[in-house]
Length: 108
Image 1 (cartoon, rainbow, N blue to C red):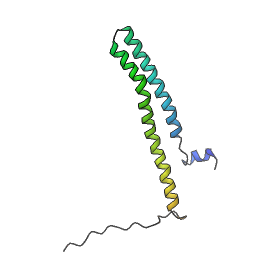
Image 2 (tube, one colour; image 1 turned 180 degrees about the vertical axis):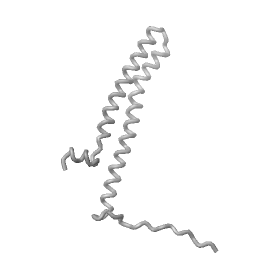
Image 3 (tube, rainbow, N blue to C red; image 1 turned 30 degrees about the vertical axis):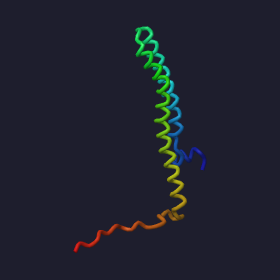
Image 4 (spheres, rainbow, N blue to C red; image 1 turned 60 degrees about the vertical axis):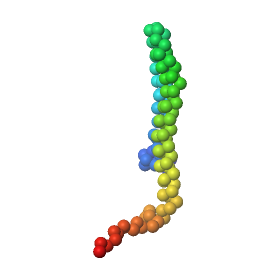
């Protein structure tokens, strides 16, 4: 099946590609926001605002990267679980071992 069919059948996820775009947008927002904070701090003579702008430029992309990686890790876990399920399940699609119900001990 081609990639188009994989997308339509929801076998291939597009969200990891979208997460990369969101990451770069987040980095741009952090850098622009930090530069705006630095400019407003210089114009308003506030050293704290300049320091906050520098921290925003340095730490903002790092935090955006961590958040995006956490989302991508969820997709990697999903892919690994699909592989495990495919390796364990027979061709019929039924589980390898049937689930046994838990029977409580008899009360005497």
